[in-house]
Image (tube, rainbow, N blue to C red; front, side, top):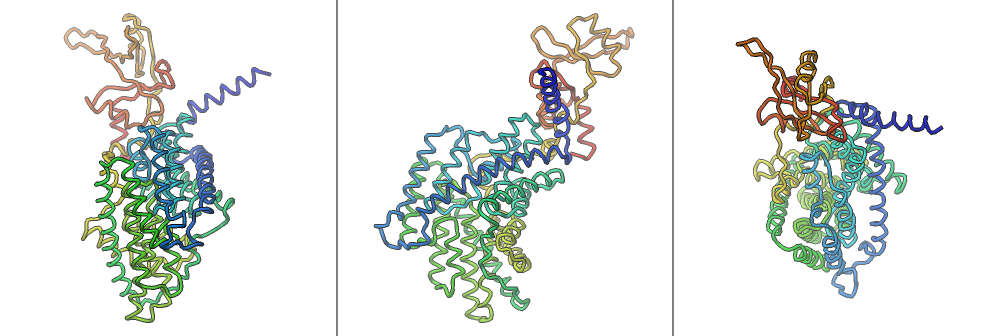
Amino acid sequence: MQLPIKNAIKQCQKYLDTDLKDNLSQAKISVQLCSLALAFALVASGVIILFRLLLQWFNDYTQTQEIDFTGNFGDWRVLLPLLGALLIWVVAILGSKRYKRMGIAYVMQRMRLHYGKIPLQSAPGQFFQALFALATNFSVGREGPAIHLGAVSASVMAEKFNLPDNSVRIMCASGIAAGIAATFNAPLAAVIFVFEVVLREYKVHYFFPIMLSAICGAVSSQLVFGNIHEYDQIGVISIPLSQYPILLVCGVTLGCIAALFNHSLLKVTATGQSWPLIYRLLLAGTITTIIGLFLPQALGSGDLAIDHAISDNPSLWLLVGLLVGKIIATIAAIGLGIPGGIVGPLFGIGALIGSILAIVSAFFFPSITPYVGLYTIIGMTAMMGVCLSAPLAALVALLELTNNAAIILPAMFVTIPAFLIAHQAFNTKSLFYKQMEIMGLDYKISSVKLGLQKKGVRALMDKRFVIVRNNDELLLEVLKRAQGRSVLTQNQAGEMEMLQLELQVVDDMSTLTRHPITGLVDTCTLKEVYDVLSRERRGEVFIYQRTVENVVGVISWAMLQKEINSGQI
């Protein structure tokens, strides 16, 4: 009975080590790739659901919707941001300094240069610090922890299964999509966000695993929290074409405000980088507490601001005050290092701007009054699209969150001039990439290396090779009979060497030559091969599985050059 079980285990191990890796190393869609992405998405979705449930439990005690504590020092909740700052600092000092980096910009850098491999040790810090930040009313969004935790969950699982690095990157992207979808119940927006913001490229073999993961995240969210669209309560009415010139002016205004917001946030981020963490956190907590004392609706991720922007007959001056307070609270929180996302606050700021523009426009054109809800949504779309350089992701996100297709045309019409004004007139760039520059995170990589990351070494390696003992006579005989195969041997130091026969023209004699050859593990991509061989633009590397003694293939510079020149990289 034990023998069949052992054979089955061996066959399973052989499949994981050879057939599965060979398949995943290819830059193409496969059932195995989709199945693994779906399995890892379940883990990522579970982590995000747990995070949301804990946050919901905290919010039952700390939410500010029910009681207005304006000017009331007696309400203990007014001091929550200061308490949150202290809790975040405690979690930070308890964790390892080596794994203190977190957030969307960090995940994007790891995706670009390290195949999305994120240390598991960074997850507890992100989980609890973001939980405390959101529960204590800092102006940060939920997508920050969703992206980081989704990426960690999927990438750690992929590494545990010893998958090729090119597929680890896909698994990480899939985990991010699952995390976003599980947070907002917006699967299509999650897919577009991953492609437009995180990956910055579209590949067919990426699409299906990421889409399946987003579906998994959305279904998980609906099973636990119901099929809820967060902003479907906003009344959106199709706007007539006669009002589009007014939308054009609104787009220009939104572009200017978005550029100013980006510049201010990045300025604060750069200034605070050299300050001790406790000083930054306490300053952010103090600013948030002061704003909450006078304008509690400006706190939180943005829902309170949105609710006030779409309320019946809101005061224009109160909306302006809330806008200023929300911008300051967001810059203080994100710029000074409070862990969390930026999308939620951008939605709040955009909703306030849209509502203000609608009310001001209604003074001159009373026919605009019924369309305040639409202006609110347009403001949210434009702010996210401009600040993150992700107009399509912003449009799709609001389309799903409102569950109303009437926003598509006017939102596109406003976002285009807003984007052009911000990026051309004010040289505004994506917040995430500017944050990486400020934090000293290198993210630039050549197009050749980026293309080589897509394929694993097992997809190209030559499996026709011979390993012989270090005996010159035997080696010479093997080389003569190799018939195109690579011949390797180990020297006395245990290093692997490549053997070649060189024909001497003078005496027509064959001479045995050897040169050292570098080994790479079979989970590497062709980029690592390029890094080794491009120094001298010749030579070979050998590929091993698990241990250096278990050689499974050889890749030469000529083979790599042929792959690059094929146009598939």
